[in-house]
Amino acid sequence: MNSIRQYRTVSTPLRDELDSIINDLLKEGFQPYGSPYAVTQDHSQVFCQAMVSFSAPKPTKSRAALLLDPKLNPQPGSSSTGGFVKQE
Image (cartoon, rainbow, N blue to C red; front, side):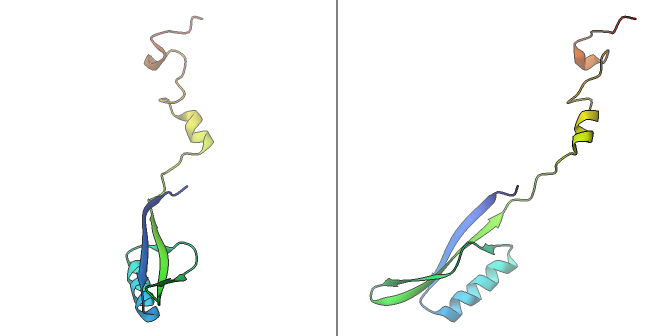
């Protein structure tokens, strides 16, 4: 799962300017987080939008690859088992 790397709230009294700021942030890899909203500040409206960027997803191994990985699933007689050797 990707985790949020950066969170920003952009705000401006001009709706068209908010669109421009959001478009610039989209080009930088940000995504809108939730819906835009307006608040009243000093008897005028301010338009706002939360924006986030996500960290790159971490590569994952399949279950089969994990089972075959000698570091995670050492085989009997290997040096990673503490030197124990299977007696036959």
